[in-house]
Image (cartoon, rainbow, N blue to C red; front, side, top):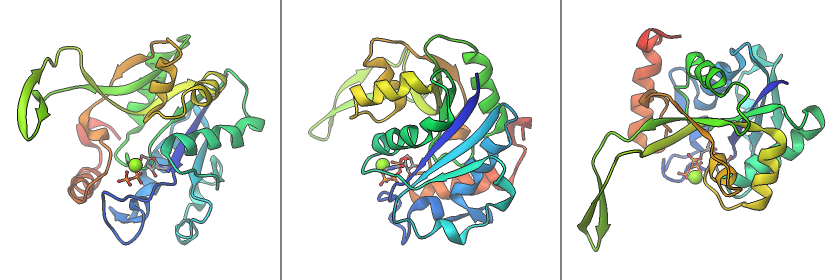
Length: 231
Ligand code: CTP
Ligand code: MG
């Protein structure tokens, strides 16, 4: 049984509001997308890293990914939604993977991912029959809004924020996404089959770069390298 990574990177980055898709903005001296790809390629247990680009992407070729070439595979099959990009990627890689191979789906926009976090996920999921995801317990008090006012305080107990990588077997995940295509993460599709993915505690450093402030925070984290005593 092998581990592969699949990185959806076909989004437009509308909330970032930049002149190009956020995955190609400069971050700590490299295109943003390169950080997560390099981290995934550096995990010994991961055999190949597939990146899903938009079919009309014209930014990728400006980057230098030569040092990642041994593991990196480029798929130009992005779709209109993240789930579609992932589904298309799973189909495109199907000829090179077994049904029970693990696929770690990771957002290109989570640039601060560390090798230690990926290894913690792989270790905790082990040979779990369902799979699992990195996530962090919700720290803030949560409010439900109605017409600009607080309607209720939502009990925080047991609530987690889902991150990526999300790790499932190729066969099960392909089937799940075909069955429930309108999900915002892979776990959502697996849950719709009545299954319960494992929650593996990560940390807040693996946040998704969405708004301009996130870019600034990621720059600080990456420039300080070796954060939390890891590489
Ligand atoms: N993604 C994708 N295909 C899409 C939409 C998103 O591959 N049609 C990817 C993004 O490139 C990103 C990841 O899914 O790496 C998470 O999506 P998100 O952070 O929402 O990125 P965007 O959709 O690009 O940003 P926004 O929602 O602000 O437009
Ligand atoms: Mg989006």
